[in-house]
Length: 83
Image (cartoon, rainbow, N blue to C red):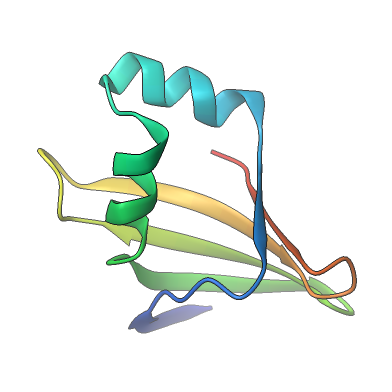
């Protein structure tokens, strides 16, 4: 579903290997990435089950716009950064 709202971290992050590979390719360190992520906008979300939602985040405050998929798991109280 298409949405438009500011992204706000609710739980601790869990990073996939793919995220680290992308950060290396973009020459962006984790601290810089988390700062940019704080200014992101949720542009789409999909409820996949009880307590699990996938959010598509648009990050524009960097050299070029980036997007990120986050699986928010309220049951486990974590946000898994997928890509």
